[in-house]
Figure (cartoon, rainbow, N blue to C red):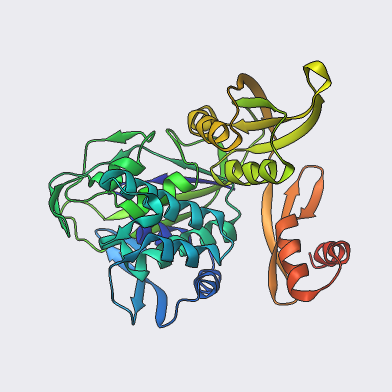
Length: 371
């Protein structure tokens, strides 16, 4: 599924979560993901509210622990328990941005306003909702930056807040909005999802959701609009990043593939090769959008130690596909439908096999039978 966001009045984590729930994401799936973090003493609810002339969904998060300060590493550890790459990537992005701003390593970052458990719930909840909806691509219209000031632990700061600006590197932005139109949590989620900015992509519209913020804006509804659609058959131009590696272990190669996919790469693979002087090697290939190529290039070079790589433009033909969910042994398994047939998502089967102890091939057959 393709998700396109229209941040009409801005974007925050709770607004995005409300829009995804309004578009059809399961609140139970969100609650299950939050429970995996190990957090206790919380509730997540959604209600319909009127904002201006529109009805939208507002998310209400309550926690017994009302502390707003804690280490970024603690929140990252809790997010890692969920197995949701977008949640982990979003919190990592926040830690890296705050560390760069304050001149400390990301591992030593202590979060103030962003240190509350509601930040963790918003981020994990959005990641779970994206997974539940089968979203594989996120697009977003230009973001209004807001104006004015915001009061923080470090004093009064200009809007957009420095952390927000750091997280929005590469985004398309515009003037507009009063106050803090885009929050660091919203910006981190967009970065973690590998968001592409611009016009609405060609797609068959399937659902629309409206997520409400908590502020009242005099002249407009305070909402973000989520449009969910299936891609049509289309040819898109993408970039292939390739590098030859003769001194990198298989474990590192597997790790790099996980990192680039979590950062938004469309695909990644490794092929064996024989280099000059008969040296055995591997060729790492990463397929990505032009917008993400620069960021992924830096990641590849940093993680592999390679002294260079090749960039090539390719045309990718993408056929339409859609997802539906079946339940097996109390767990959800996504089923991918394409012109050539249907198959269960491998990661969901692996998770189910670990829970049930049943063979993977039998679970795949049972998932097909459950349709």
